[in-house]
Length: 89
Image (cartoon, rainbow, N blue to C red; front, side):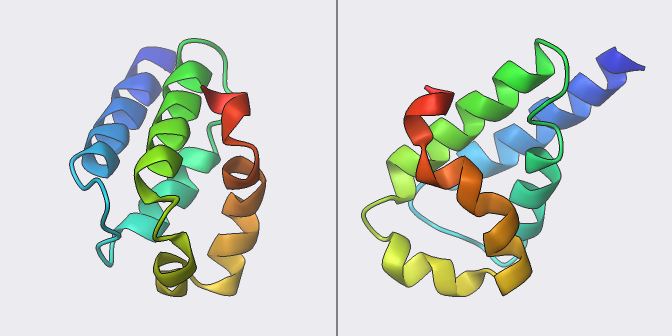
């Protein structure tokens, strides 16, 4: 149920937060998985938004170089979440 889904989202969020300033090969897929839960009920949605806000804070300066690690499809999924990070703070 919802608790299990939130546990999974928390685990994925921890993976992302464990790698500030880097984008390991597995991270784009994890971010897309998290993005799929941005409209879930609270507290899941809040965890996802916080994770993206923090990701953007730590990756924004190097984004022109880092975005090459993402496929076009991944970038298109994530763009709306990354362009307005204040929405997630």
